[in-house]
Length: 305
Image (tube, rainbow, N blue to C red):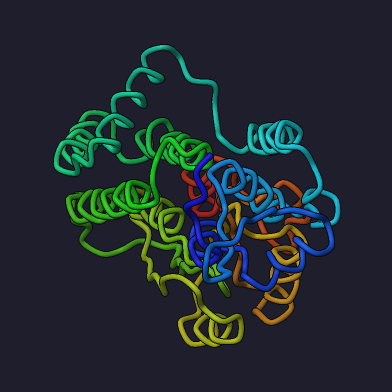
């Protein structure tokens, strides 16, 4: 057993604050660090893996007092059960083999091969099909491999950078419209949501449908997002929420947002956040669980306006 991870390493890797780790150590008896000659806490790989699982469950809305004392097998089972409904369709053998090939490129840090393969797929199948059947499930697989330690943080970041580049290039290569068509869509993420890929996937779907659109990017404060909506007057305010968002926080933000926006501005939300499965009141927001549903909803919107 090798004790190589400092408490700063653990904080950077998992996003769990140092103070919180120390509280858990006193309150629950986990984690169980060793001390080096300078009294610095050191953690092994097994504890890092367990802490990654705990953080995933906390992001899904579980309480620390419930999950921190759990054995790793139970943590893994709960993560698998929670994440499985969010990772999309069951893949056939050909799709699974394709994802495996792409993961090999990621592990080899072969960004040129990964970029080229994805652009070729988009030229063959179109943006929406590649987003739904390749990029979204690939992102889920990369997340699972990072959780289990099969992919390093830098490799996950490389994947994100390539996907960003691919989606931007694909949007730039879409046939030029004489004029952008309604609806006018404003896109953003709120608060501490820094994940950009879900937002870019949504923007790509709107772009393929020829929508007039403007992206505010990530981490917009709620009040600033509302101010932007009041100034731009979009038909649709589209938001992306990743799995790191606690359900209670997402639902609270959506209710606040709905109360601050004009009734004519629809709120559309997507992403891997568990809370989106709980958004059932269309008067508050319309939740999407697949990319293809966005195009259908745009067609319905245009037919009714």
